[in-house]
Amino acid sequence: MSAPKLSFHQIVEHFAPGWFATVMGTGVLSIALFAFRQSIPFASAIQSVFLWLAVLLFIVLLVPWLTRWIQHPEAVRRDLQHPVSAAFFPTMPISLLVIGVALEKTSPSFLSESALWSTLLILWMAGAAGILLFALSILNIFFHQPELKWEAATFGWLIPPVSTLLIPVLGFSLAGHYAASAWGAFTLFVSLMFTGVGTLLFLFVMGTVFTRYVFYALPPVQLAPTLMVGVAPTSILTIIVLRLVKPAQAVMAFSPQVAETLNAVAAIAAVALWGFALFWLILAALVTLEVHRKTPLPFALSWWAFIFPLGAFAVASGALYQAAPFGFFLWSGLLVLAGVMVMWLVTLIRTLHGAWQGKLFVPHHAPQK
Image (cartoon, rainbow, N blue to C red; front, side, top):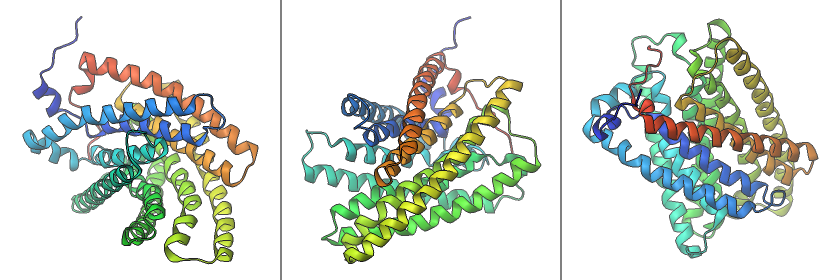
């Protein structure tokens, strides 16, 4: 049976808010390759391919995403009020930050240094503004719901906290570069504030969803990949604590002795945070395999929930190995990176096939509140 032909109008109307997870998953692999550039042949060339593919995906997806807000505001409003779909809206501004970090690590030759950092600053401000807007809007909507059933909670709810934690990843680079100007202090202190927001939101949401998974039946099988999102927050926090000291010293003029102490504390904290990410990765893999054994996982856009968290874990492993050169961090990161690149290829092919057939543009049926 041939696949139904969908018009652009139909595609836009049912364009799921989680499509930008494809950009996140593709862009983070560019960053991960940079983290292991000394261990992987031709890493720089492959890194550039992933970066520009992420940019291309972003441009392509932005058209139906923006059109939907204009032509189908009622559908957007309905998704924003949905306890599952709403959490995926921040994937769009997250993509801006992921592309920004990947662009910083790639440093394309056709951009002058001034143009590069101006572009990064624009991406950071746009991404941070979008993340803040969605985080406040989603929480405000949820707080005013008459009732949210426990069964509606999934680890996809961690996406808003993860989004706020990505702001300092690029923000600290900007703070270091602009340390001699007011932009340095602005980007540093805003990044520190969002570090606090993301960390506490992660703890609140993780505790809430963890309780739901323990005391209630697991979500529908198509949402099983969202369990892997729990790997991302502490992976990103590992990167944050390792990157914090240098820009903070540049802006706040710490003495070398203070900086040395902070670097030592940061390395210890990074190992502890990375340890939880590794623990959750193993737990998520075990639970997902058991779910798959009972009911095979159907392909859905939620498969992209595997890619970005594992990519973030690989980046954290590479950053941690540079700070604490223990071989276990290196080989763990390389092993996960190899696995996630295979998963990325399979998921991309199935996504393109599903999009071509129109199966990914039909109305999605997530659990209701």
